[in-house]
Length: 204
Ligand code: GAR
Image (cartoon, rainbow, N blue to C red; front, top):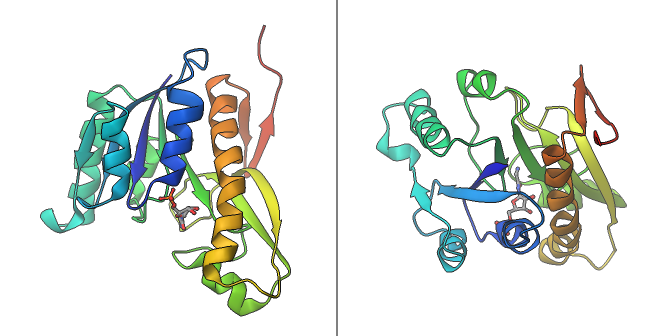
């Protein structure tokens, strides 16, 4: 299975996908391209070290977000991608892109959705004062962090936490859960029924 990993930042999730999937020849999962909307994203350096092709598509180079999405779509189709993986990609796709790749785009988010969607999930979590938070991996739909939930893992919030310490603890779980979910997808074990994602046994 060929995946595209879309990034905007440091790329620690990308690194775990490289280590746990791309470089595991038994996984059957190849990261065919890494696409970034920021030319300085450290994730691009990680991709280059792993000899994975990279593409930079910056929103400011396009007249509107439909054109930006279309350029990303062109790369996705050129590389014959099966699954689009958002790993810290901080742009929202417009409805035509989501419709074209329905149930073929997944995202990792640093909270237990539907709590704390959006770009500042960890600081919003701390400000609200909840005692447990976590990680969500979900399919992407037309809204912000509202798509069908595939898997979640809880993480405790400690009184001593600041944004960095809490995000670090969440990321430890992201780095385990995200590759696992992509393996499930590759094994064709995820069935979407309305808002529910059901995990079925792999065909033997
Ligand atoms: C991750 O923690 C991911 O959950 C978050 O960005 C971080 C990227 O880290 N995504 C969102 O907040 C999406 N709303 P990374 O670049 O080190 O993988």
